[in-house]
Image (cartoon, rainbow, N blue to C red; front, side, top):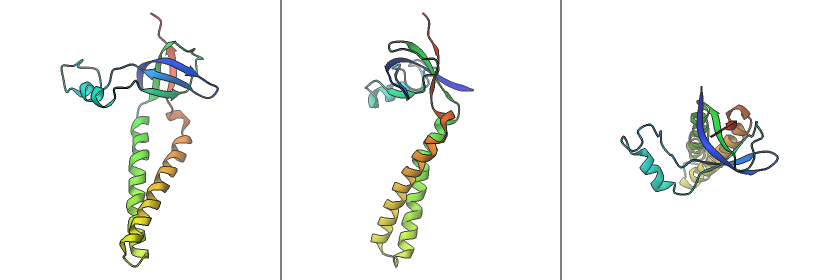
Length: 142
């Protein structure tokens, strides 16, 4: 199953295409009558959202398109970007604390090293998973 959203192509280069997603945020099922997540999204994300996507259909600037991503890719990406650095930060802090004679300075250095290593590792892992990248599936004809 795929997750899809509408977007407009705003820039195109050799590797990726930059698209601007429509203004809807949240699940957009309730259309303002339910949980209010779209109002919270508008409060914190007032600027248009732009994303780099793979342009498999060779859409041109100005085209309205459907952008898709494999279901579960977003959750895996969030897990890598947030949880992996956090786990390595705690591991680095514990390792620094024990190795440094139980001093806070070593724990802080270990935590910093673990956090930086976690972000670098997450970026590397995400770059090696091309099937998780969002891509343009089709043009919208109106």
